[in-house]
Length: 324
Ligand code: GLU
Ligand code: ZN
Image (cartoon, rainbow, N blue to C red):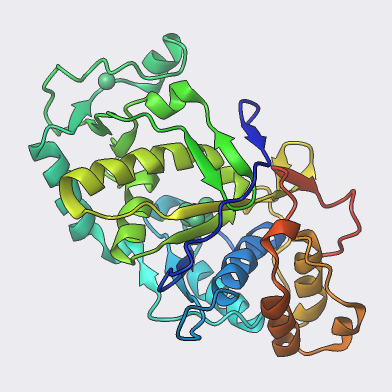
C-alpha cells in the first residue's frame, strides 16, 4: 500500500438524476464478522440508505456471500455473518447471492474471454515469477498451453490504475501491478476473486462499491476487467468505488479473521455500533448511547456524511477513543 498516492481533490457531484443506487456488502465466510468488517458493512449500508432518488426511494443494499474458496471457509460463518448484520439493524434487499452457485456464469465468462483471445493458459510457478521480480511479464501469452494444470490469465489491454474514490479522493495504484496479466482462474481449479467479484457486481447491477482500503489495489484490476467485459461481453458501466480506512491493531496489521480479531457480540450491539460510527467520523450524538439499534441506525442514515469519513488508509483503533 506504500505506493498509493491519494489527494483530496474536489469531489465531483453525483449525477443529479441517478435513478437508482445499488450497493452491496460482500463478505467471505472465512470467519465471523469483526470490528473491521462490521465498519465496511455499515459504511456500505449507510451510503446506500442515505441516497434518495427522485421518487423518494432509498438506495438498495444487497448482501453477497463470497464463498468461492472452500478450503478457507469456516463452517457456519455465512449464517453467523447474516445474523450479526440483522442484530445490527442492517437489513438487506433482495435475496442473498452465494457465489458458490454462480459457477456456470463464471465459466461462461471464461469461455467467452478465451474465444476472443482475451485470456490464456499459464503454467508459471510462483517461484518463477518471484525470480523475475514478482510481476508477471506475459511469458505464456504465446505458449498455447492446455487447460490441464494451468492457471488462466487475462490479456490486460488497459492497465487502468487511477480512479476517483468516494472517500480517498484521486487514487493512483501501482502501475506495474495494474498492467499485469492477472489470474482469473486458479491452477487449483477455483475461480479467482477478481473474476467473481466483477462478474457478480455486473450481474447484480451494482453501481456503488463501498469497502475497506485493503481492496484499493485490487480495484485497479477490477477496473480493467470491467472495461474488458464491457467492451466484449456486457456493455456495463463501471461502479463508483469508495474505500474506508482499515481498522488496524498496530501499524500495518489489519484486524482480520486470520489474526483472530474478536468476533462481534450480537447480544449488546449498541456500543459497538456507536464505536463503528465514531470510527467512520460520523460523531454520533451522546444521547444515542441510550437508544435502540433502530434509533441509532435511523440517526446514522439521516446524518450520513461521506466527507466526514477520514481519508486515511488505516486507523489504529488502540490510539483513538474507540471501544469495540
Ligand atoms: N469478499 C471480499 C472480502 O471479504 C470482499 C469483496 C469486495 O467487497 O469487493 O475481503
Ligand atoms: Zn506463465
